[in-house]
Length: 460
Image (tube, rainbow, N blue to C red; front, side):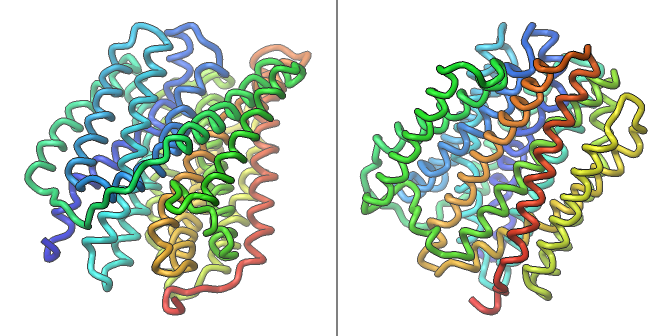
């Protein structure tokens, strides 16, 4: 079994690639979905952000279930959920059904991600952990970057529903592959799942996201909007407080007492907000402001997707050789400069070749951060805490991606509603406001990178 770990985890790699691909697959298709279903930007973005939200809420539960059930049982449950959600979204007659399908997909993805990481780290020998982390980074980074491009190519000539129909048979074939290749690894236990923790996390994060979305629709002036936002924050605080008291928490927040892990987590959150935000905003700019086709807007993102994959692999080797600080500073310097350029250069006449080139450079900066910051986070904690560090990292990145998407669309729509100019100039004004926000987030990441302490893998 351990002589050929690549074969054993092949079905997990494929399943997670599809799950990560579906995170961003709808980005380029949103304008077509809005037209087909008769919905606005604030409503449409939920088809993207709800996936991140549900996955983020499900991940800590998956961390518990990995120890409770066998690898194969959890795999078939998660992939079965993903397949069910995919089918439902494909045949959905209206927005509510598509959203329900995305929620069910998100549950499957949330179960898959920690199962993927945990199984790979268990089956690969210690001298191959670097390769294992590279494989994880490639799937987690390249698949979301390819999503908008692939969807643009499909939606150009076909219905957005084909995005779901095309994935479904691959999921089914992969389940058949898993019956042959996937084996059970690790031991099981019989600890009790804390249902109150699940309730608090679900209500808290969903309430906070809904409140931010309301702020975008209403301009942030309604009392009920702020009541929902602060209500969500209060329940999240209750969730964290409960985790600190439980003997076996869903998420062990004590891990943030480790300064290096806390810093790397913040950097990872900021990086993912920028990545998800730009991948969401560029297609809206290309199609709604410039009137380009989904195919062209998707192809704009292709060079960036390729360079992200290359940069992720190269940065892992650079981290092994030079450590974390130089790489992270360089990556965030690129990101800060590029987001500022996008803010200043986007107009009704900007060369789309220039936009594609700038986006590609942005993905290089993100690629230089993604793999090293994950390796740094895992290297920063004791071996006994890795089981808590992995689900915590995935959870906060998923939730922050969801929050970032809602926040940026809310900023865009709020700016549009307060603008006296007409469409598409009003949308351009809103997009620029969102890119100013991303520039500020990148600047914060760059500042934190100068306070990182060095921690090479050999030091742990």
